[in-house]
Length: 101
Image (cartoon, rainbow, N blue to C red; front, side, top):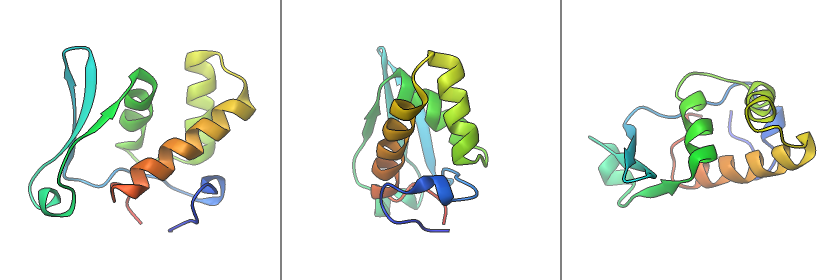
C-alpha cells in the first residue's frame, strides 16, 4: 500500500511499524527505534504535541480520513490545512521507514 509522497488520502490503512516507541521526555516527544529497527533507523525523531497525537493514532490501523477527522475534532483546525499538514507528517514518517506497507 505504498503511496507517492503527499497523496496519502488514497491509502486505505496507515499504521506505524512495530519496533518504534514514542517517549515523552522533558516536554518533548521522541520516537526511538528498538530491536531490529535500530539497524534501519539510526537516530531519533522529535515530534510536537500534534505529531505525537497523530503517531499514537497510527499505532493502530487507521485511515487517512479518520486521522484527518481526529485532528479536526481535537484541534479545531480548518480541514484543508489539516490535510496538508497530515500529508507532510506522513511523508516524514514514511521517510524514516516507520509506516507499514
